Image (cartoon, rainbow, N blue to C red; front, side, top):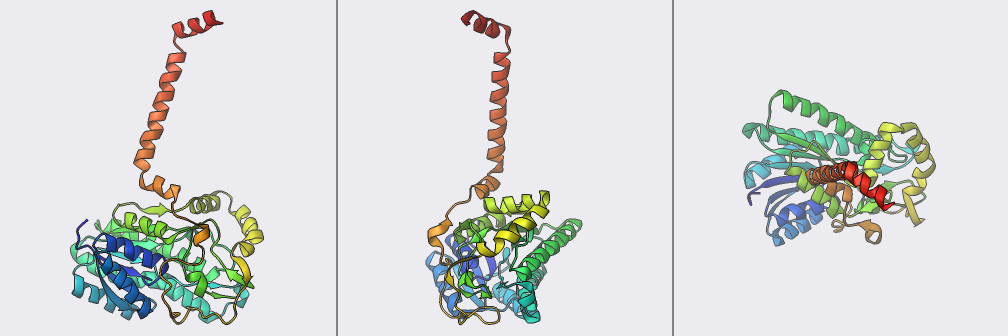
Length: 342
């Protein structure tokens, strides 16, 4: 990878975006950092520079296409042509559908879905000039399988997948060398559960098993440098996708019975806790949330996905050895020797 690789990350001030910014910073990349909270963006910039990269702070609400376009232009002016654009910004509301307000549905959709659309369009405008570049959509197992209490977020993630598949077909039609990929994430230990708007009676949590944001960051970095259509992170993601394809009705019943409890833990929620739906919450929350003691540092499924050629060779080798052993056992002299021994 060139040390001058230029990367843009939305939602870069905390959680997965913050961890991903660090990952690219370690590789000497020049990173445009997009989010609303200037304080956390500045902290992310310092981290990247301490790791050997360069960073540009871009306070921006991805729900505003003009702000996104101006941010993309600023990155080009400062660092040059954009090589990689990562659409990671999101927001959610934990609430039963009937208690949601129209403004809440609108806001989640504008950030989590339309923010991806606006970011993708801004990236395409620039990548088309050179007919190269990679756009990474940060997805979720919830792209395929919705869960209760997050209807707005699940719907927005479904929309991202539909938009991405449509655009991919257009790029193929145009014989474009621009690559479009999506990384489907499991539950992650990020600060969003400390600031998400919630009507749950108890504290919100990611549905276990939980993974550290660095696992997500490694997957995003890898996806940005390999021409893979889609990457799955975590066994829970694989299970959710397969379950939705094979037994969606059973999953409806299972999640109806377990989905409420699985998204809550510990004591009662604080009704005065500030949320980040319409305004950023102050403070430097960095990459990790409150679940370090329960979060996994590695994903075997991600490793398999990243090294599937090695897995394929191993499977073929094992099959070949099995076939040789079978042929040896079927040889006449081998059978006679076993009869004499008996």
